[in-house]
Image (cartoon, rainbow, N blue to C red; front, side, top):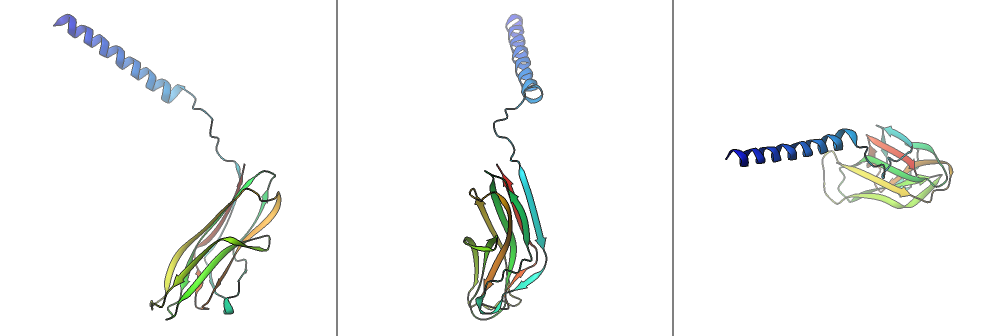
Length: 171
C-alpha cells in the first residue's frame, strides 16, 4: 500500500499546485479583457420636494420646477429619467394625472405615464410612485433643456414631493 499511496499523494499534490497556480494567475496576475468599456459621458440631475397641483380645465402645466440644461455632442445618445410621486385626491369620482417630457419647449407625445383613480373614496388620497424614461439616439448636437409637463382632471390631484429628473449623454 505504500507505493500506491505515495503515487496518489504525489498526483494529488501536483493537481493541487496546478489549480492553485491557475487560481493565483487568474485572480491576481491576468489582466481582464477590455471588450466592454464603461460608458463615458455627462450626467445632470435635478430634484425637488415641492407639491404642484393640477391646473384647472385639464391644461398642461409646464411650470419648470424641474429643469435641466444639457449638451449633446455629435453621435451621442441621451437617456432621460423622471421619478416622482402623484397624489390623487380623496374625491368620489374618477381622476387621472398624465406626465410627459418637454425638450426644448416641445412636449413629447411619447413616452408618457398616466395614473388613474376610479370612483373609490380614499381618505387622505392615494399616493403613487411613477417613473418615466426615454432613450434617444437621434438627438441633434447642441445645447438643450428638458423639463416635465403634467395635466389632470382634478385640481385636488398633485405631483407630490420627492421628484427627480436625470439626464445622461454617452457614446
